[in-house]
Amino acid sequence: GRFEIIERLVLTTPAGRSVEAPLSSRFPSGHAWGVSRHILDEWMVRAAELAGADLFTGMEAARLERDGARGWSVEARLPSSGPGAAESAGAALRLHAPLLIAADGANSRIGRLLAKGQAAGRKRRRPSRVFGFQSLYDAPAMRSGTVEIHFFPGGYLGLQRVGSGLTNACGIVDPLRAGVIPAPLDALIEQAARGNPAARRRLAGAKRVSAWQAVGGLRFGPLSPVRCGAFFVGDASGTIEPFTGEGIAMALASAALLSRATGLFLEGKAGLVEAQLAYARDWRRAFLRRLQLCRLLRQLAACGPLLEAGAAAMGRRPSLARALFLLTRTRPAAWAQGQP
Image 1 (cartoon, one colour):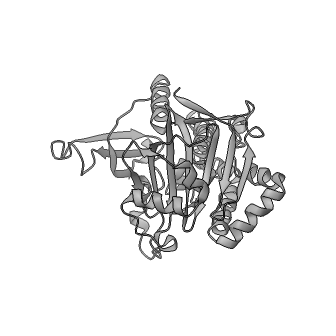
Image 2 (tube, helix red, strand yellow):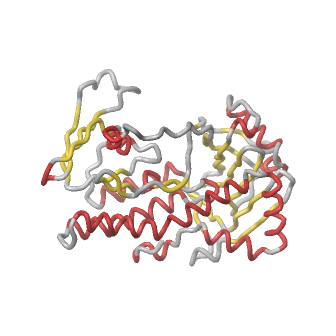
Image 3 (tube, rainbow, N blue to C red):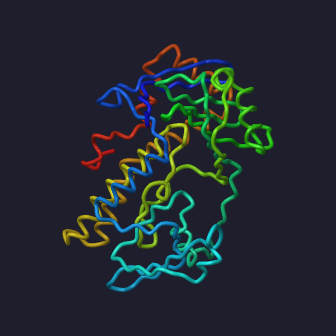
């Protein structure tokens, strides 16, 4: 099929400890879906078109201006590099809108353009060594019905079946902590397998069937949902630790909150500042503590002895594992009420 039924979460450690928690307490149906990101994106694009949205694909914001009473003026162009860039140099699209919403990821281009005029005097952050990687595997030893997080020194590897007989393999690594050179990525996966016996069993006989995707300089935690007069949503407003598996759910939930706040403004029931304050309040209520908790859990997991001690404690008391699992979750049934 095009998706997998996921019923259990499994966490494993380098010492061979394993913690398992059911998903039945989170979902009314008792399970989640494992869906390829490519298929999910197709569904969301189709839903946007059916809702009446005009889509301009392959474009990036090049220039932003506050446009007085009209709101915002956005100039969009094809990227300056990549296929077709030379042929389309100079081609631009200008849009006007009463609101500006940045939904363009953790390294938001909208955010960078808006911050250009405010960069003076700001302390520059130290570059992050952490990077993420992803590919699809034909992994015959992978269990069905589970999402598995395998910790290894310096990072972790997530494995989950996503339909059509394929397993998604993605992870996070700090090369300095892991003591590895992160290229080629196939060698990194071998390093992860050597650092965790459960990962080694799952990847036995596995064959990579797609190209690697990788992104560097990763940072996790809350940003601000309203900046420079614009709304920020999804990873552009804050990024949750990937081991939680909550990135997409948090993005969709924050979009539901944003829709409610901007709807009040567009229907004339609230002013712009009132709508921004309402969205920022609801966003922080829904996500801030969870983002802070997940950052703390990641720091604890990076310390080998603490990770092993925590896994041992959860092994003795499964209720502790279920409690931590629920504290990192987004509650889909509450999105419409603005209480993710």
